[in-house]
Structures are given as C-alpha cells and as structure tokens.
Amino acid sequence: MTVASGLLHTARKLTEDATRVVVLSGAGMSAESGVPTFRDAQTGLWERYSPEQLATEEAFRAEPDLVWSWYLWRARMVRACEPNAGHRALGVAQHRCAERGGSLQVVTQNVDDLHERGGAEVLAHLHGSLFEYRCADCDAPAEFDPGTAEAGHMGTEEDLEKMLRTPPPICSQCAHGTLRPGIVWFGEMLPMDAFSSAQTAVEQCDLALVVGTSGLVQPAASLPYRALGSGAAVVEINPEATPLSDDATVTLRGTAAELLPELLLDSSGALS
Ligand code: OAD
Image (cartoon, rainbow, N blue to C red; front, side, top):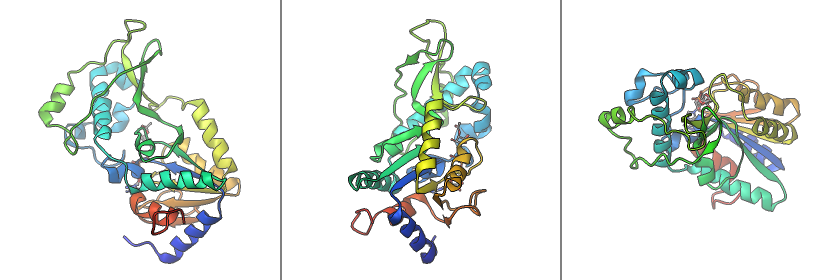
C-alpha cells in the first residue's frame, strides 16, 4: 500500500516540529509481529470463542480453566513473536527525542511486551499485561512463568486441548484463591495511575500518533480527542478507516511497520 506523499510529508513536518510526542497504540501495532488483533478472526481451537466472551471476570469464575488457558496461549504466542520495524522505530525515536530535550511517550492498550522489547519504555499499559499475575481472591501479586511456544508454531489442536485441562495455579499467599492474569477485563476499571498519566501526557503533548487501534473501546478511545481538545495535532496510522479518521489532523492509510520508520527515521535509521 502506498501512502499519498503529500500526507506523509505533512505528517513528517508535524513530527519534526513537535517537542512532546505521545504514541497511542493498539493491537494493530503488533499485527506484523504475528500477534492477531482482537477484531481479527480467532484461530484454531479459539474460533469457537469470541474475545469478549473470554475477557470477563464472569467467564473466569464460570470456566477458569478455559479463560486461564486462553491467556496462557496468548502469553506463549507473544513470547514467540519479535518486535517489528514499527516497535523498533519508536525505540530509536524515543531515545533521540530525549537526547534533544524532548519526549516521546508510549501509551498502549496492548498487553504484550513488544514495545519494551523493541527498545521503548512504556508510560502506561492501559489494559494490563499478559506477564503479570495476581490472586483472583486476595489480590496478592504472584510470580508465574507461562513458558514459550516454539517460534512460528502455536501447537496442534491436541496440544491446545491438553492446555485446556490446565487449571490456574493456587495462590501461595492465601492458599485457596487461584491466579488470574493481570489484564483489565471488560467491566473492570483501568488502573487509575496508568490512565491519569496517559491523560496528562495527551493534554501536554504537541502531537499524538494513534497507531493500530479501532477506537472502539473506552476510555482509551477518548485520548486522541483529549489531545485534539488541548490543541495538539493527531496523526492516525491504520490501514482501515476508524471513527477517528475524519477528526484526525492527518490520517495515513498503511501499517505500523511500514509507516513508523518512514515517519520517524531518515534513510540511515536516524531520527528525521
Ligand atoms: P482492534 O482489534 O479492535 O483493532 C485493531 C486495529 O488495528 C484495526 O483498526 C485495524 O485496522 C488496525 N490494524 C490491523 N493491522 C494493522 C497494522 N499492521 N498496522 C496498523 N494498524 C493495523 O484492537 P484495539 O483497538 O487495540 O481490550 O482493541 C482495543 C481493546 O479491545 C484491546 O486492548 C482489548 C480488546 O478487547 C482488552 O483486552 C481489555
């Protein structure tokens, strides 16, 4: 896909002129690393379930083995994936911005760790993390290693069926509750400190780059509008139209791995 060069030029100018940049990322950011987005069809055994059915506390209480297994599967899948050129461009750009006395802050809805592995520090994981666990009853934080899938191989249907019979571990603190993933499920509150740092960041930025989110889940979807309301420019990167597209200052139709390096780095890989 080619992006109209005039739009790319305008977006590059906005990026060059900005001192404080905030990146608001969603599942599309990691799609080219091999992590399916939420609104993509699910694969294999998981075709039978919608993420909305699995990502609730009620589902976990009703079928803990099923929900635990889904998150175990996702954690192993993410471990087998690598950051893409978009994640790496943000890592480089964040360091270069800091060297120039500016800032590039990352606020993500993603529960993977690909921004961090791509070299960028994350200000806020709005929806939690696949690699943090706590007791579903007493709330005590817990250590748990989900393991790793072989690169490019997420297991056979038989492996997944076996995984489905894995109950969540018992909490070592209270000895009766079970562990749950540190994800913000539908119906749960976002971590207040994460959301308030994200709000402050967008209110103070000159430019918000909104990458790979459908903009359908609140309150994360309100952040680009808060940036616009505070006078910042908003550049959207997404191969598809979203509810934000018409309101954004510039919309670039393309992918994160393709466009973020073009927008943020020059041909030698330095910040443009
Ligand atoms: P979605 O799956 O809703 O949307 C992914 C977006 O990424 C879509 O707009 C795609 O067009 C776009 N996209 C796909 N491939 C892309 C690429 N290579 N580069 C850039 N964009 C691409 O994901 P989110 O908006 O992140 O919540 O979903 C928000 C929340 O809904 C998730 O955090 C999750 C989910 O339920 C929780 O788990 C609590």
